Image 1: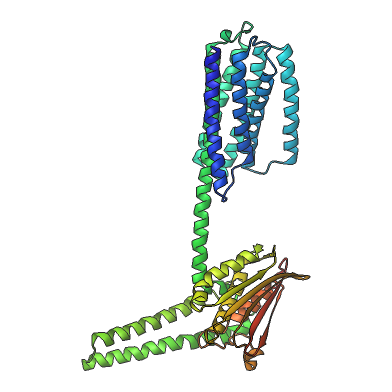
Image 2: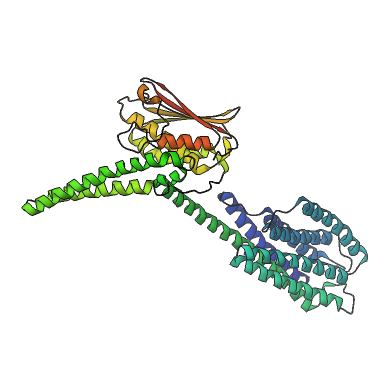
Length: 482
């Protein structure tokens, strides 16, 4: 009988140990979502308790007054069950320091009380106490899991709750058997078969609950991966349609800028629409004369398609210009944001054979609107690339610096182009002012608008044939100016 019971405990210990090492290796292989230390610690402590208890069963002589190793084993079981309950609580909210202290004190009290019962009590009283405590912890776990399911439904939490119900059933069954026992048990052979069945069944359900927790963690990793992928796709979509970030364009200056902006829109649209009109007239003329050959037809249609796409792009870029959305702020790592902007601009950087130089201080953290700052950095980066397109210099380079200042942080983007013409320097940040052959002249105006909304400043330095440098100064915590 002793050997058989010990084998049961060893088998369950080996199964749980395998689960622990499997999770541990997976834990080290990924960084997206870490498993809870409460759960991992509970599983490890329970494995140790099973091994100690199984070994003690083999050598025990008097089950009414066993050796101290049974106090150690049962303490491990108590700690494991308590840690599992704390894990369930951590699903809903962070475990408070008071609860942690209370849990630590309860372990010391348990050791003193259980060891006293080991010396002066009976097998029946110790078993009843352990079963009763376990039932209380299972009730706590079931309650916490129920709260979590309401806010975040999960099949794995349902499985774990079922396992907890089963554990509580078998624990209460053990309690009833001991309370109803009419004689004192002193030898392992005297333990009722029903009690052994309920004890092993409770441990099996305990193993299933750990497996359910592992399944829940894997489920959360899958959800996190999907969320990350969706966020990545969403970011790409927003970057492909950068015009969506112009939503705040007229937020601070609607009345003064609406007329001028409308004129600019009309001017921009007239060009592709006028070109389309000429191509259509040309196509009609050739059709009426019967002189339209396939090559000419393809050329005209391609031109029409390009003009149509250009007009559509202009409309898309301004569709949200009058939106009045409240922009939220959050902690922004400027180093990560700069790397993201470089990823977007990398194809053009490689195409133009531009060398990038990064000189960034550590911990460039501010509280601001990430999307708006991304628009600023992307506009300045694209301007720097454009400045290098027209030069024949083989040593094209862009240097991005990020450093802490007394007022917050400062970012600078410097190119080795030909510099900015003195005739246009005074109007660089004005709405509808542009030095490019295409565009609407709102890029640098929008940059200044965003930076000033964050309580910062933007300026530039330019030297003939040596390039230009744009500076952005931002406070650590942005104070939006409406």
